[in-house]
Amino acid sequence: MDTSINRENLDARVSAVRLFNRFYTRQIGVLNEGLLRSPYSLTECRVLYELAEKQELAATDLVRDLALDAGYLSRLLKNLRDQGLIAGKPSPQDGRQTLLYLTQAGNEAFAILDKDSAAETAAVLSAMTTSDQARLLLSMAEIRVLLGREQSSAPITLRDHRPGDMGWIVHRQARLYAEEYAWNGEFEALIAQICGKFIEEFQPDWERCWIAERTGTILGSVFVVKQSEEIAKLRMLYVEPAARGSGLGQRLVEECITFARAKGYRTLTLWTNGNLTAARKIYDRLGFTLTKSEQHHSFGHDLIGENWDLAL
Image (cartoon, rainbow, N blue to C red; front, side, top):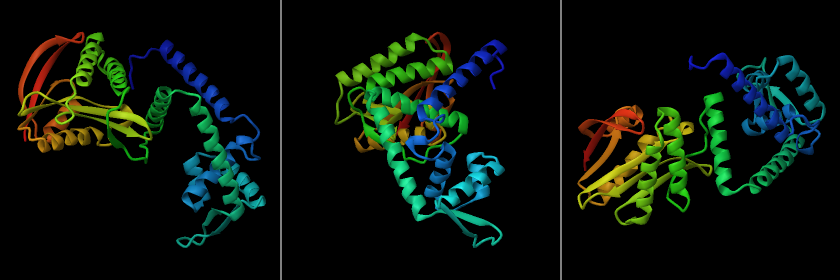
């Protein structure tokens, strides 16, 4: 925990989180008597969703997974049983335990809820621009990681760059490096120049940019550019906080290595800074060699610039 946060700042942040919580509960209709204009409460919908997704669960599993009071859940389950939405059967592993599952009526009720939820979400997203949708999804992913310490089960895919990606990359890298390393506008100017030059001088037979996405949200990127007939340069590797720990950084670098070898380059080179420890570990692990280091003052700080090479 950052002990530099004083009480006044903490109180302001607590108020901001509570304000967001009130806003979000209004957005999803938690305070309505029935969610999605249905006869079911939010908690009942959550139970139906869990049973639809996992097929069979014990009441103790629902208490754990949904963080519910056991007594409250017992009353809720009785209500769902009385409506004919759920039923139970002895567990084959432990006959003393009952496994809950959706009845045919329960599955039909859930199908309607699921369809209405998807339609309502689609309506919200359709009112936004594509850029705003991407920002929303990225923010949601970061909230899930920061509060739940979880990784999404959706796969991360790689694609080529498209119009608009360079502006996003400049924006995100400038923001992240300012937040994490306090780098100033000089860094933003540098990466904007690199991205602009890549677009203006792009040689598709010899260069490439990979954009990493999950469910339409950009989670990272990397470039290979031609430096000479024999030397390719890896540039601008970055991974969003929401995807860190997933192996994405190494995967992006491995794509660069494979591409450079396939194109017949003899060396893959890169420039980084000594304080970017996560990236340096990837380069070292994949066989790059530190060939040169020197002190410099850039981006508002005294740094150690490093050149790394990989013989292909």
